[in-house]
Length: 460
Image (cartoon, rainbow, N blue to C red):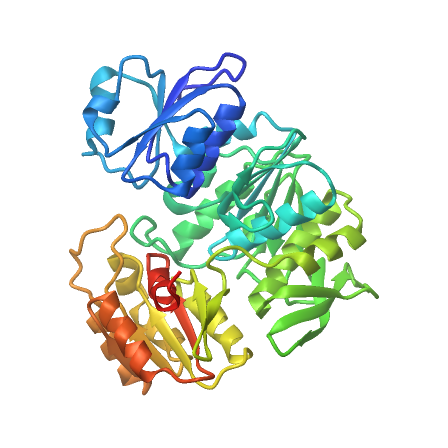
């Protein structure tokens, strides 16, 4: 693997520089005084921000963009081997790193690199922890998989020893990291276009945990099945959190307000706190994301009063049960959920949110995930009063599996839930305008571009 000497900046080119993670890494390298260039499909606020800070960005990916003065190329798992720029890199013999390998090398420049992993909740927990560190004035460097409102972006350049990032298991990318403290929020089946089964996924997370040094700390969900299999051979300190009172961190006195926002008391190693935590974001899933962040804040010796204040003011990240607006008395929420567990959590939250009827406009994400979890998707979506399906968002895939949104529609209908399918966003928007009434809760849901439906209805 190519090793970067951060004391001697070079010219680094990013294939897909406008991605939410890639743009943040490019910004960090600019801060280290590297020459940064790259390409993306089209201009965006992220690429425009990079250009304003000195990066050079080409739109459209062409072999001619790969010039001889480039010292190193960075690419993501989404870049296919037939990409013309990647082919040119290989032909010229230019060294290359994956996004995860670059991120891992950047982490080694900090004394306290922190990595947040899990099948679900990474962005929210990373964001909560980020706000806690900012409230504590610890000046962290942050790399987040979503837009954090408090920093108006997905990254922040700090000058302290603290570096915080999400750690994704897809393609085993987090095995390229060098954390000092890690969180494992949960482990479930996902990314089955890469992993064979749940055991292979568990093994990947186990290897991730083993990256921690003996003076490091793992914070792990004690509710994970056979969690001791993942922790028994670790040399680092292990802290558990979860529903079980036997965990090092658990909760009591959980209650919700009229907007499904939780209040609870933390139990630390059997000792309940007398000062309750109140969240400004709805849903039980956010309670346990917050609990993991609280445990990590304690490891860093951040006063509980600061953690409490940061969580009380945390208003979430983009596309996580995000209030988009109201139209004729119809509340429009957008959510990134694209796995059955995430959908269940979001729709259970919606049940505790003011509504007459819950309409869920869902865009399945990838053919492989839709096929692997078809019955689970149907069951989760049936928590809504009505489901409206868009076509599958293919992301990195092509349809070779014989699966479609019509297949999912039939599975939802079989469970007795009203389910419509439309092949275009225009048709979905027209249907919603004709059928939604004052007091309805409309949720656009998925990891693709389904957010446009709500935004188009609101005219934003």
